Image (cartoon, rainbow, N blue to C red; front, side, top):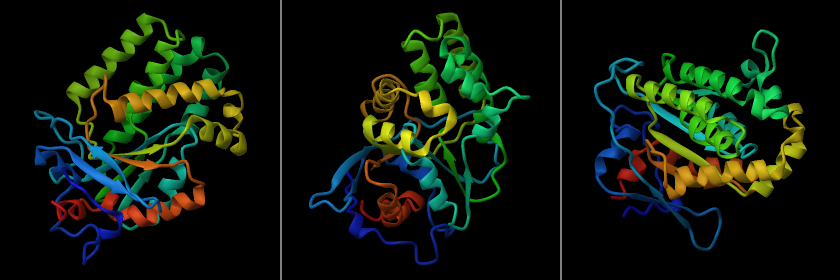
Length: 283
């Protein structure tokens, strides 16, 4: 087991992206679970496992021969993903890609996101088909910088939101099977690189309160039980690992705090997120 105390992290002396550092993907080669401790100002730190996924082979890299780092920020609606991305967007050598919500709201004049929230049984398959397409574009577009930080991923689109529609009875099984086969083909035939998942974990109640505060038009009708279902699927995927594959180490951050304190947490733990060599030093 690896223990990393937040107070003990040290940055790379020549910056977080020096050539001597190994990429985050190197964590997969350790052959044992990793345990990361994030203190959050508590007397005792919290410990989280970083479980390493299986390496893929036999696929052509989309972004050239030199491996770059892809970090996916995952979490419930209103978990603070935008705040996280805005914070790291100020760091040199990081390319930040947000969810293409604007595209989902205007597909040749049609607001697929709004339609789905109004009638998910009718429009769920339509939105999720388009979400899968736009997420695939996010994953496969050429990387211009050493690190790409993405808001969610094609994985959470399938494992969280498609799965929720199906389990809640709002997506017929034929629709679910078609989307699943399309997703499986993508994962088998294309390189979807993910080197680290940062999971912003918080209670559904906190999400609900934040949703009401930010007053996004499509989200006004989101009930608490929907956020609870999305939370449970995140826990099933990233914490319990009872059904779906986790392709990369997972760093769990307690996101129940107010957003200003979250920024301080990102500042405190930025080296753990951006520089895997800091974890390696503790072995």
